[in-house]
Image 1 (spheres, rainbow, N blue to C red):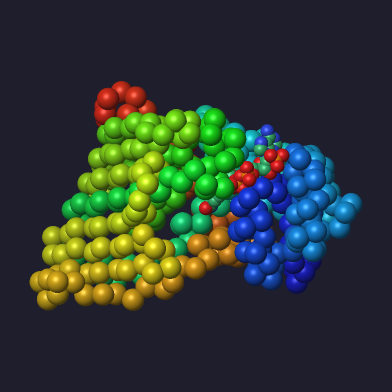
Image 2 (cartoon, helix red, strand yellow):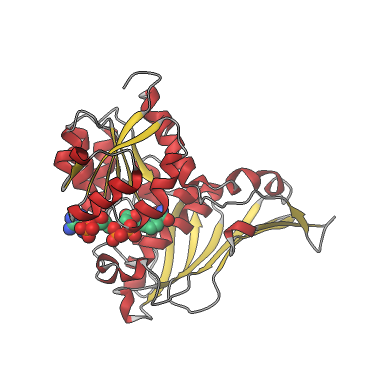
Amino acid sequence: MSDDSPIKLGLIGTGIFSRLSHLPAIETVSDLKLTACANRTIEKAKEFAVKAGTISEDKVYSDIAGLVSDPDVDAIDALLPAQFTLDAVNQCVAAGKPIAFEKPIAATLEQAKEIVRISRGTDLPIAVLENFAYWHIAHEIKAPLAEIGDIIYFSQYCTGPFHTDNIYLQTSWRQKPEHVGGFLSDGGVHQVAIFTEILGEVESLSAQTKQVRELSGDVDTLTSTLKMKSGVLGTFTYTSAVSYPKINKLTIHGTKGTVAYDYSDRNNATLTLFTAEAPKGKSIPVEKNEQDGVPAEFENFAAAVKAKDKSLLHVPSEKGFHHFAVICAAVESGKNNGASVKVAVP
Ligand SMILES: NC(=O)c1ccc[n+]([C@@H]2O[C@H](COP(=O)([O-])OP(=O)(O)OC[C@H]3O[C@@H](n4cnc5c(N)ncnc54)[C@H](OP(=O)(O)O)[C@@H]3O)[C@@H](O)[C@H]2O)c1
């Protein structure tokens, strides 16, 4: 890879999200060019290569070993069920190639710790693709937050509708999850990314969990109380098991007012500031989030790879670890009838 040529990217896991999201996002990043792909079911990789239009037939592989050893691949994009990510990271690092991989960081805390250990031991950029950490809200909320005094308490309330025709629900690895908490870690890490991006890390929590839908394969509903490292208190409720509607709300209360962010419809999110001057609420403009943060995470990965500087990564493995560790702590607490659990550190 020369300084002005695009990074040659190899993609492993040509499933739903690679086609619907990664492919169009990568196409928007001038520093990236998809040159190879791999998939366990190679026919799907071949179809993906045709759809991409930039991958020749001889650059289609059935496993990651072929992909990482290809000299025409500078870096890897991995979209696998979480239990296979550690192996992908190991193979990339052994081949001296940076990797960006989909959330959650791993299927278990042990695997996640190992990924952080590997990341700390190499100069290669190793990025967790947590697109919610790239939403504009973390910047847009700063000005209104400065007006509410000291933050006391927050509430993050999220319901993800359960529809049996949801294409993601049809995937067998989601129906029989090896990743802790099944849908709670699959979707819940996104929500943890939103509030921790704004309020910092969680120190400890107490949660109740339950499984509502058999198809979820594991617990699918959690409600919890949190103590943040800053001392701020909060509640976090997440379920993928209700029918209607989809609700995503973050409300932050301070000594002088409240900020409410409603991203139930992420393309029409609202941000409202309540203070003594505006007791009924003042609307703060927010950007539309049509692209879900995915192009931004690839821009960030490309910048770190080009600069050979892993410190440029917005979601390094430590941050992805924390998102996942919060869900793991909630699942553990739920199994122990709400006992307080410290969130693991890598
Ligand atoms: N950021 C987001 O908003 C978001 C949204 C959706 C998904 N994702 C992430 O994207 C990744 C893929 O999800 P998806 O919805 O696209 O699922 P998917 O369509 O089922 O794709 C999974 C991919 O992993 C491969 N795979 C499954 N089991 C394997 C095994 N034992 N060995 C090797 N490869 C295996 C599949 O290969 P086969 O074709 O051979 O089955 C397929 O290519 C997951 O990590 C998920 O968390 C993120």
